[in-house]
Length: 318
Length: 248
Ligand SMILES: Cc1cc2nc3c(=O)[nH]c(=O)nc-3n(C[C@H](O)[C@H](O)[C@H](O)COP(=O)(O)OP(=O)(O)OC[C@H]3O[C@@H](n4cnc5c(N)ncnc54)[C@H](O)[C@@H]3O)c2cc1C
Ligand SMILES: Nc1ncnc2c1ncn2[C@@H]1O[C@H](COP(=O)(O)O)[C@@H](O)[C@H]1O
Image (cartoon, rainbow over all chains, first blue to last red; front, side, top):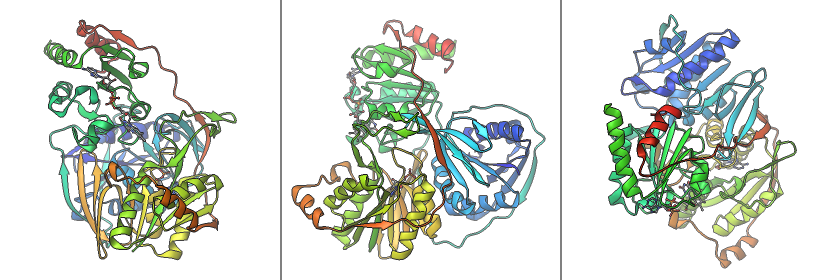
């Protein structure tokens, strides 16, 4: 029995999504009256997990796990799951988690639902709601298997503290023979990634050119936000492809999404629908984006954004 | 080099999404179907290997006869041959099993699928297939160079890019960046004519399992009306975001 969560860390700290998985896993573990186990790789400060409801942490530290590789990590998670009779594995929606989940599905002969947006609607058979059609719809998915895997959408459950006396154990790594090598990792340094961000500030063609992006960057910095853009903006090379959000780019599931000079085409909206609160700044009152927004400002971005930055700074210092 | 490109046949990105039969099925009425955009990036890259490195490119889909125009389009784009596995799949696991049964017969050097389909968004078929085949796997693949038996690939990660290398055989999950948008191939008349002569084989499905099923679809709740803020009263926006929406 038991529920296993895969907890990711970055720069020596658990990611917020790891704590969200703990909160989510705790809630299901309480309903099923089973243990909540966390697997953690090359990370020793596991106390925080107890704050969010984890009963037991299995730590695996090994040079082979220094860089994430899906096969190595999946092999290790598989043995943790099997040795502990785990029936449910919960992963986040990070790029790495989505990379390894399908591998785990095969090695555990499990059912898998990605993009799950909340607690299960039923536990027997396991029934979850997940987003599909790139956030234009949801489907209710039934996973009637011995072992199942849930990929939880980031920010869909939130954090809930629930203090547990956590126990920690070390496990040795399961080393795969492989010719697969990570040669280089280039991080876009000092920035919040779109996947992890609570707030995302996004710019469209209405900003006229890359030379005006300081407006987006300053607004993002004021809010501790990630920066994003519409597809044409990345196609024209004003911004890197990694910032393109929408149906053919990245999904955004932040708490706050601020769109500046973006018209709100259906393909753009598809990607950002699951953001909770949307603010639209556009000088055209007819821009379709206003229909999908919670708050709207009809105005020139070159006036509204500097004003917003100024007022936010006043707000922060008060 | 033998390449397989897995094609998912999906509603056009501008489609309105509606459901029928008590919200248990997607409403295909008036919907245009296209090659899943991620698969199209992959197919375009495959055609590059065909032209530059003499690769042979096969496209495959697991689906009913309604997928055939999409396969014909892949042939018109340049694929050498097409295969349809005759099964209307219930889930990604089943698709991966059908694909792996075919791949075990054919020994492809490179299997290209999309990072995810834009209808089901499972992001599972390529990974499952790689695990079933015990092949190397790179998803979110945004660059791929192959020399001899060695592949060098870039993968988009959260907040960056990772470069990896490995030996073939390899499965990739293709995405934007793998080829440039301007290099996507729009079939010309000659391609369309040639496609008619190329082989589109129908293959019976093998026995397979289902691990998940869809009991119902739902549409997102209707949104409340937008609150407009006067551009001269930005303080009010901050107040709303702080006190009402509680997001700052
Ligand atoms: C297959 C396919 C997939 C696609 N996928 C995506 C996707 O994933 N993501 C995506 O974003 N798009 C996608 N698109 C493109 C999409 O259809 C739109 O073309 C695109 O989103 C428009 O980008 P935009 O809003 O930045 O530009 P525009 O549509 O040109 O809009 C610019 C907006 O800025 C406003 N503006 C102008 N000047 C100012 C000013 N001074 N101050 C304030 N506002 C101003 C204008 O009123 C206008 O509303 C896709 C298209 C296709 C065909
Ligand atoms: N029915 C199918 N037939 C062939 N390939 C498929 C099928 N469904 C999905 N795929 C491939 O798997 C990728 C990811 O799909 P999914 O796991 O559904 O998100 C797609 O981009 C296709 O390359």
